[in-house]
Amino acid sequence: MINTLIIYSHPSKKSYTFQVLEQLTQILNNQNFKVEVSDLYAMNFLSDMTEQEYEREGFANIQLPIPKDVIEEHKKIGEADCIIFLYPVWWSDCPAKLKGWFDRVFSVGYAYGQRPELPKMKTVKCGAVICTAGHPNNFLKEIGIEQSMQNIMLDDRLGKRFENKDMLILGGTLDIENVRQTHIKQIERLVNKINQYFADA
Image 1: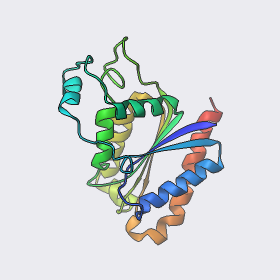
Image 2: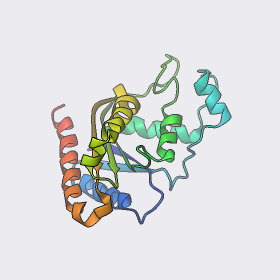
Image 3: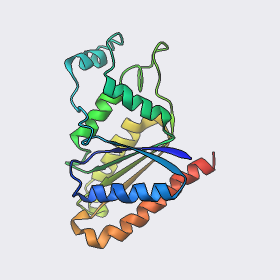
Image 4: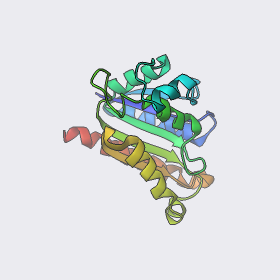
């Protein structure tokens, strides 16, 4: 059983991104995956750092406490074999709620600037990014947004914290009916690829 954590960031259950979440969860459940979802909006996850959190991060003051909601996310990461980030593309990046998750959860002493006296984030076997975008993929590639998103999400935020990294941009959602089946097949291929990482281990 592959323990999979989905970090999901979208405020509306009427959205296409929520439909992707349902489809992704079904595909994962039909294969060898145990799925847990951190629905950041449903959890009312705090995206803004408090002043104390900033002082802990900005000055590497590891004596200051880590908030309970962040510790809960650390526990989920510790149990995960695979983490999938699912969100819509807003202004060429993820929603502020997810950006805040990285700001707060990838804390000093845990995800970077490791200290021997603090728990360290493990290297996760697989990290995948799935994002929905109104513009088609070829347009995002042409204007450089596709590469920019890959650089930010895969190279910086996931970085060396993940052994295997993939990004799937489900573009063209302004014409959902014509791309829906293609997107489902792309999601299925990604899940098969993730499965293969563990089969090859």
